Length: 126
Image (spheres, rainbow, N blue to C red):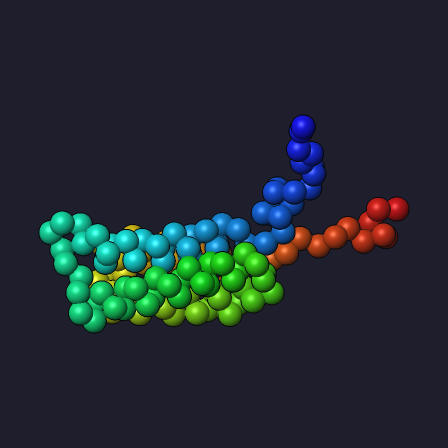
């Protein structure tokens, strides 16, 4: 038994939404969580910085998933992620050792800059 794959499946889904923006936001959020969870052996993020890392990381993951599943909310997610990425510099130990900050800042910029592709009009087809 073979599984039929529609030609407009994954590529069409990925191209019809700000996929890279959502991916970078989710990866940045996971990086914030992982840095505070693992602690890298020599750094222990406890207290308010650890709590902020978990909270901000979860919000970044939610913003990334929101940009995937509802591209119309990309402006809200992008602005929220841009503000939270700046907050993470202060509240979450330089935004997860700067890597989380960079991922989320670029992801928020991509979410704000993404424009959906317009379907060709009937006048252009003729």
